[in-house]
Length: 204
Ligand code: IMP
Image (cartoon, rainbow, N blue to C red; front, side, top):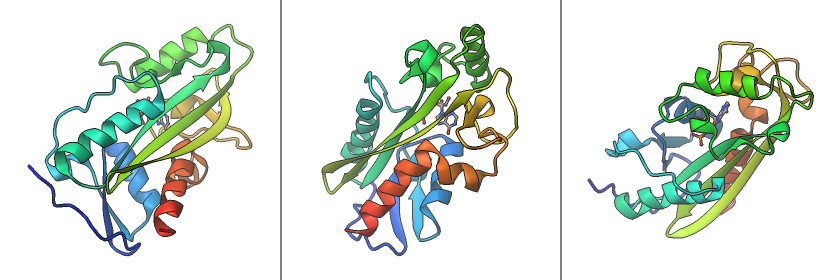
């Protein structure tokens, strides 16, 4: 299926494809981009295959996913890749955050493995990093966002996804999983990278 090419990038009523199947991320990013943007996810353009993510950097994976969509669907699009980097684990799980506990593992499996690996660690410092790759009329653009915090010893909260229940951002007493989504988006790695994307598009 070919998706019609978008030519207008007016900030009003703009459509853009976000190269993800992840409903949590699609909802989060749609909220961050605001009501003037129509954010289409992969199922919305008839792309039901899993896009390969075989690079060994966040930037490489984000570009790989964005090019996959651009090359096949001929539509302007962006893709993101996120990693949790833990100081005491020398930056792990990093680019392997999604499958830290093995192929097909759940978010909870990953959190449990992280807590096991860190059970003797006094240094709890960690950060989330997001890289967003935008392909606009064939040109690549990269935007990055980061949030620092610590990894708690036990999960707290039922919102969000992934490592949210054990991540306490610096300057806050709620984990990402205890926060209202709007507050998380305003300080998160993905929120910050997306804000740079929005600023770029709005200033074109
Ligand atoms: P992705 O590149 O956005 O798919 O992220 C890779 C993995 O990092 C996900 O499978 C989650 O485990 C984790 N992750 C990404 N974003 C977040 C977040 O906002 N909170 C908690 N975990 C996240």
